[in-house]
Length: 236
Image 1 (tube, helix red, strand yellow):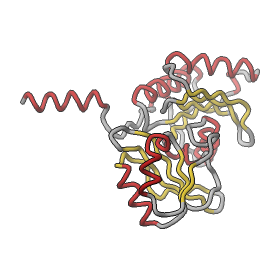
Image 2 (tube, rainbow, N blue to C red):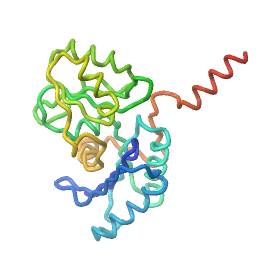
Image 3 (cartoon, rainbow, N blue to C red):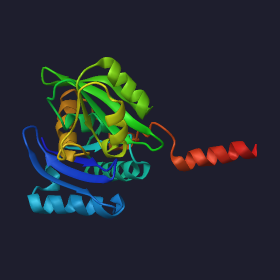
Image 4 (cartoon, rainbow, N blue to C red):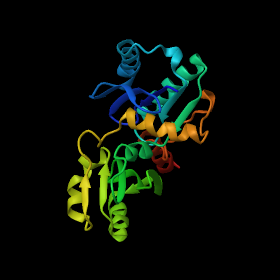
């Protein structure tokens, strides 16, 4: 079983080819280029360098959100297009789950967090028990300080992962009262290899969809939509 994994839900563009046992290839880049410029060339280059025929891919896994609205649209459109073209089923993985799976096996609570602007983050809480990831809090948009209050109340060691660390590091250091660590650099951003590994678990449970069924999970309206709605209200 071979999986093509795609994650462009953040500033990071990451793609990987994996099976049940190993990551065969991974291409991850964190730059200011738009994913529309980089994602398909990355996939093509990865297939060429790994010498894996596209016909050997059995499933396409994709980060289904939340995250950057533009990034999610590009990633999901790419996965949907390839799924339709290759007639392959898709595995839609919640973005926060995939980030947490990147620090598999740590003790205590894993807090995945991505910047959602205005001192808000997209976040999910997890722990690993008997080599399985358990969800404590499903991913959702939340104010940073509200999230920290919840973590303080739990009183367990916390491993923070995701791009929200960089943005809200000072608030975390100021407000978190329990023991905590920041995930190291190779695991503190979105990685398609982690997405592919978690997809294996989904496939084992038959949690797959058709390409036509794929819809991103934005979890909230975009800033442009919010501004438009506020303008409409002010004119009413």
